[in-house]
Image 1 (cartoon, rainbow, N blue to C red):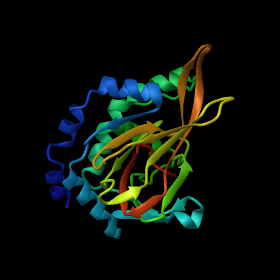
Image 2: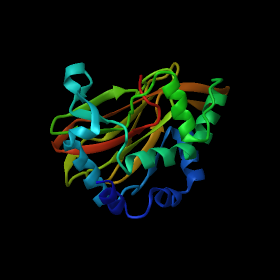
Image 3: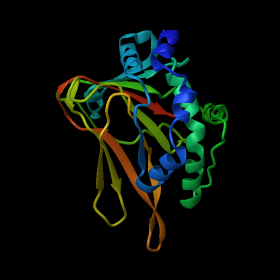
Image 4: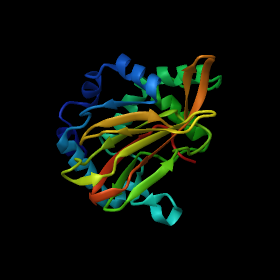
Length: 245
């Protein structure tokens, strides 16, 4: 299956990521808390990754959202070893995001700094007891949705994460928009609806980020979710860089 996924991906992961203007991507992330990577995955790769959902041996746990008040729909966390290209995407995206993650922490007065090598960050998580992998596949059907939330799984949290839409709006489903909200001090929450097509990825803040104001920078709190599907089925790949306790 790994070889088939690699073939569907087209070029290798590193080559596809290298095609993006990363200074611009980081600039957009810094300015608005999210940025898109259009066409990160080819349609064939999206189909093959989505098909993994029905192979339970690849996953460590399954969550039915309605049982926990998370919304409606379900998702599964991959187990180690992560299938390709999920693990390769995770490892290749991380070093491109580290500079902004460290910049944000410095601006917000947070002492944590992230190593350039992803293996070192994972070692930090595992040493603290966060040893369960967090990349996941999500599946939504008609009337399903995901409540606004944050993916915090322990003491060590990398401040950015990625979601890749594996289904095509209007062909595979309707509704089901990816939504972000920012809660700013003494202000009402600001919503963002991110328009994604099949294979598009969105990078976004996990928890909080700095925003520059007239009196210096201040911290805003972010949450993300998915609006209600009106019809069809929607699959998403989620890439979270910190592991869970």
